Length: 267
Image 1 (cartoon, rainbow, N blue to C red):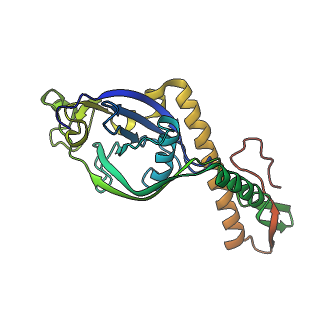
Image 2 (cartoon, helix red, strand yellow):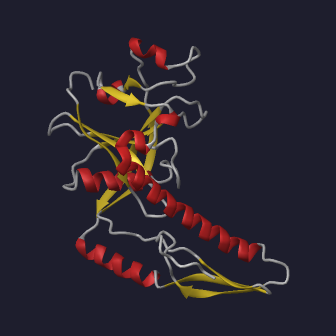
Image 3 (cartoon, rainbow, N blue to C red):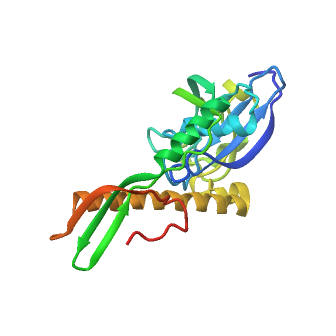
């Protein structure tokens, strides 16, 4: 937007989405006054773990709305990846995300959702594998839903053109196919001449963006993703490829949360 003075008002590493599914994103919010919709850039880190930001963009939008604009103020959302999604070229890409609709979840619906989640979390699918070495119990992980104040539906993506200032030409290789150092680009369609910092994929990590606390948060949520996928894989293997001579019993079991570091071994 030409002629609009944008200010960076928020720049942090933020957790988002269900624990065990999503990890953290880089959130930057730009504002230009009360009568202009803010622009929020959510970035997927180069070392991300869990589902991709494209597949969880609704969760990222909910987190941005809940934390930054809980009063319901509308904003424009931009997804940033440190590489081109379609070609996997190691240069940054930005896409504006538009949703078909959003809704605020009222107190009564949040209460009903909590009760339903508590009920669903009591039992889950479990498989007990019995061999001559003993019995091993595999339990399907339960994903904690958390309390949701907003929901976003029907995302669509529109690529945004980047402008590279003349003094940032050295940030790209001679062929322009790889970002080799941090640089500042422009998104003229949204932020005019306001600089937007970008990093090579290897440097776009929580520790370098948000410091030790962000690194610890990312590691904790990444571990939860590993535990969830490990539990799911073990259950699938037990059912689809049992050991020769093993007896497999499939039935419901008391749910445990593999995102909890204190979850006891299922043996």
